[in-house]
Structure formats: C-alpha cells, structure tokens
Image 1 (cartoon, rainbow, N blue to C red):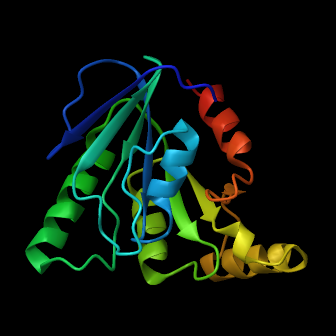
Image 2: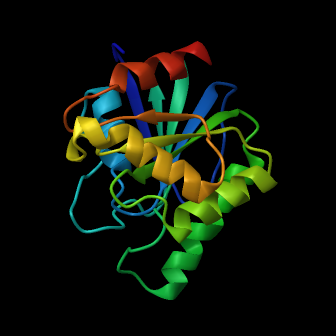
Image 3: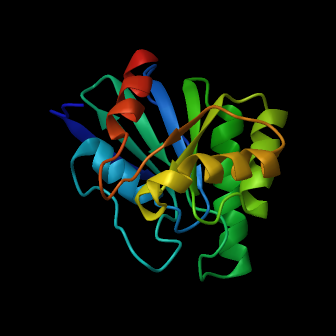
Amino acid sequence: MKVNKIEFNMMGKYEKKDDLSEFAFVGRSNAGKSSIINTLTNKKINRVSKKPGCTRCINTIKINDKFYIVDLPGAGFAKVSLKEKKRFNKITEQYLEESEHLRTVFLIMDIKVAPTNIDIMMIEWLKSIHRNFVLILNKVDNIPKNKLQQRKKEIFKKLGFKYPSITVSATKKINITELEKFILSMV
C-alpha cells in the first residue's frame, strides 16, 4: 500500500470527525500490534517496545485521506495500575461499541502463544456486540513452515471455530500485502 499522506491523532476517548471507514487493531500487549501498524504504513508511527503497554489511548491514523487505522490500547500485561487498565478497557469498549464507521476489528495474536484467555474473551465480546473481526496471527516467522498449519489447527481447535484469519510477520513483512488488500477492498 502506497502511503502518501498520514495524519496521526491521539485521543483519550473516541471522537469521530468524518465518514471515512475505520479499521481497528486490538490485541494482547506484546502481540505485535504496533509493529503491524508501522509495517502497513511504512512509517515508524507507533513506538515498538519489548515492554508491554505502550499504547495508552486511542490513536487514529488517517491514511491518504481515505480511511483510518485505529490503534487501541493492548490488553493484559501492561505494567500499569489497575485504575489505568480499567481506563484502557473503558475507552476500548466505548470505541468498539459506538463507532459507526468501523468496518473490521483486527485481533492481533502472537501465533506462538495464542489463544490466551484474553484473546478468547475478546473474541466472545466482539461476537456479543456483533462486530466483524479477523484474527491476525502475527510472528509467523517464529514458527517453522512445516509446523504452521498444525499450529493454526491447534489455535482453532482451542477457539472451537475456524475464524477468518491472516498469518503475518510484521518484522519480515510476510503476508502484509494480503492484509493491505483486505483493508483496501473494504474502503
């Protein structure tokens, strides 16, 4: 995806200004959400860290005046107070429940450890609010190619259903074009 123009905005709560389509990225802390967004945009927009929980508000990234990537706070291992975790959850829930222009939620999972209880709770919640979602199984470069299909089967068996998914590696740019095409097909 050729990115000619980016507008970045950080918000404490969701406030929509126009009618452009939105694609939300959510997931457990340290699953690679920021890396995927940086790879999609070909820019270092988000801070990537080994320390979980760097995204602490809603970040909207307007791409080429055509659509938004919405980066939501990670769930799980952020080393912040319980009060701060509750704030993360509240702004994420508000956005996912209220956005009228949200086309798809991309639930980022680390393919080596997924699905965690946090992943499963997020899937169940997205289903309960009737949101379209796609699983992004990230860090596929850390799984031997001959074991990839087996690993995916294990994930879907634990989830109890084969949800739409894309396997990617943000660092090696594996299948990022597939993710781009999916987004552009819905704009």
